[in-house]
Length: 258
Ligand SMILES: [Zn+2]
Image 1 (cartoon, rainbow, N blue to C red):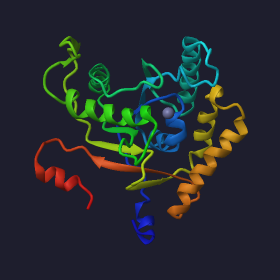
Image 2: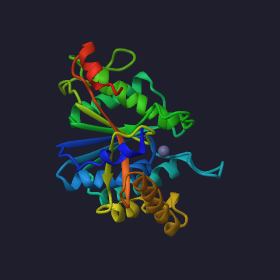
Image 3: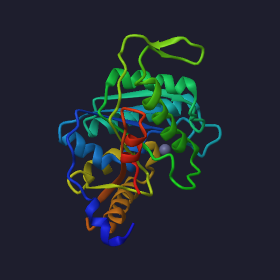
Image 4: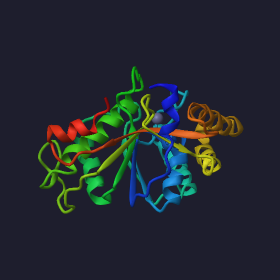
């Protein structure tokens, strides 16, 4: 990308009916896309989160009680979500550090996608070059796999042993995905109107904000660094990808960036 083209990526926030964020840990949304989630909510979208883990291993203390830490982090996530007026938070409670693009997780996610029926999916860009955070990479892959296959195929959602996971909800095709934590953004939003709420929501993860002032400052610093590239004071960037409803080469070609 040439610098001269960069400002053209700045866009007004589109209107969506229901936005689903699939994330790996408590604080992922707030740290990486909370300003845009607040913008989408302000524009009328209902917002839901599915967390793959509850952050139950994110402690420097090797003897930390995993169950207690997970419960605390879930409570913090609910408080953070309330600050952004999020409608629903679902915890799938996979083990922290062991997120996998596996059949049970695909089925569990697909069941939620069919129930919630979002028109926009937010998740990690799994193709972020040299991303060594396994949970983040796998989160992007498993969210895409669930959306691409089990959620939109006719018939029930079945688990790995063929058991029916979601017999009633009809298939649902999400038309668009926005990847956060991306190196190749296609859209940029001005989050100046929502940065205070984003920072407050991030600080609500108290067990991951030992110094709340420093944590909030970090949110502003990161948003300013992104914004500087696009002529904005404070910004978040995403790679937006249409999710073609058919398998044709023409549709894939149209969705590709050259
Ligand atoms: Zn994370």
